[in-house]
Image (tube, helix red, strand yellow):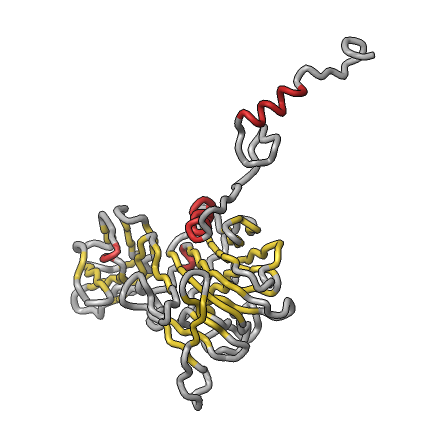
Length: 347
């Protein structure tokens, strides 16, 4: 056994609901004193303990935290950094003649050509679902979200990515609407991150965990809302089209590895070398947790006003209108005295 402090287990990253309590723990040996720090400003938080408890967590507490373990006359041991996020809408890009995040003044987009010898291109905006939309072409140019490298690594704890897309690209081609992905050499073993794309069907993939693929096509040159979620508690990856659950994976226990690549729109990676998307893109949103089926349906009906979504068929809904009312009772009552018993009722 060494005499100096040794970190045996680093604190784990957390996503909690606003107002809840977050608890970080570091497992170590030979520690005498403990100092917890916020990564963004170096501020000391908590007391002299291997456990850091933060109560009433709010958006302002979102940061990376680490612990310095000390013992007199020996070098300090410093834990790895653990992230803290609240369950919320992290960012939304409306593409109203700009690539800005409408939620706050950071995580803005840059339209870029990965070829270092090329001039910075101009993004093209056209009439969209509501207001303007981003026009993407069959080329390596794409949108890179600045400062999204580390903070957007909450996705192993759960995420939702939602995008409105209109494309008529070939069904054999893969078009990536949004991604945060490192592409490994031995695909998909070395790949890390998530990808929301389409190749006729809509696909939500969380690398090294699972994927979900829709049953219907989204490549028909019509507007579709495509939503991908990952609920870490059961380990389920799901994909929705136009507010309806299309497919979900079986529960699993694999943990997705994080990556140091930015969020990208219109290509599979920041290099623009795979899954190039051609078409219109509008209202892209990223959440730090998995939205429920009802939440996703509301996202759709909030935009497509006047339309409704039937979550699932109800027992005794005889006329198929997704509600049980007097009309269903009338259909039931019309036949409720019919009898086919022999000999009581027949012949």
